[in-house]
Image (cartoon, rainbow, N blue to C red):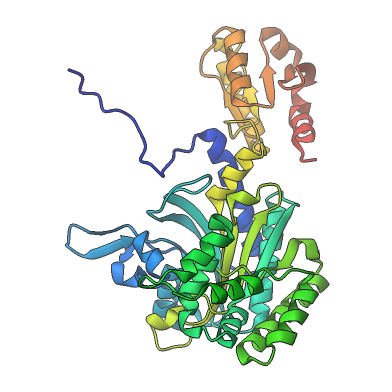
Length: 446
């Protein structure tokens, strides 16, 4: 009887081999650069928190997906389901030393015990940035600009940042006499892309506990407002004419007008930043501007960068007012989208240059050349065995090296090495003294 344990992963979790981890780390590096360029500083918080810190912050649906358990000290603990709630706790705990406004970014795994789908896992990495300690609309506007620059830095041109404001939505519901049902109505509306119009109406009409239980006419009225179409200006003018006398709606419209005007002035094309009244975000803690970002070439995968303003979240932990706004890049969903769109480079090595071990007696020379290249910032791998060249080249091509360096006794005596472009299958001879410059010229980004 075998004692071997079957190697397998849990449903909703996945392994990341080199060909996925390399672009994943690249995305993290690019996100870090963009966040830092706006003055956001890095922080981190524990993966595990007291359950009371996390529960009841995002709504009942959020609570149901939290991984919660008793640890060895019999404490009631849970794994974080996002990075925003732990940040609110962090800010309440440390804001005296940090001062306001405080701008932070954080990158790390979060866990949600929810149904899996394309690009949606139970463990995934979020890359958050937030500004806390100000209600200024300038912070909301900057959040839009960060998302735009982030998507461009990650290599995307065809994307749409869809924006809305919870104040507009709450004012519209108030005008319809549905303020008391705002939370379940917005939760249902947030599922429009997933379950469709009739599915949303059915959920809004559901009279079960924690559901809105409205009439079909009321549900359709909410959907009609959410489905308002036209240019950004047209939509704002229409809701201003119909509902602008409501104080909440009026403030939301004013903040959206300024956001759209400033981002346009800053150079963001209207095709990339669109007002969408159906965007409402499912988490209960949002109070103002909200954002969801979709890839135009793969909209069905869902939002890859989402967030919004949350003015009351930290109030659960401190009496000091700590309003905040921010967004989160869904790294693994974006990576899954890039897989589907065939945008990932076909490589499983972090080093672009491969050194063939032609002769074991020359290992010292191979390592000397490798260290010379590494000193110039070029990644190099030396094959560990002086085996058949065919085997070494097969290894190099399989892992996606760009160049191979080949040199034997004759080449070393002549002071040259052969550089082979593995994709083009072309080979040139280069003087050792010119090797660094030659490779740097070929490896320089286009």
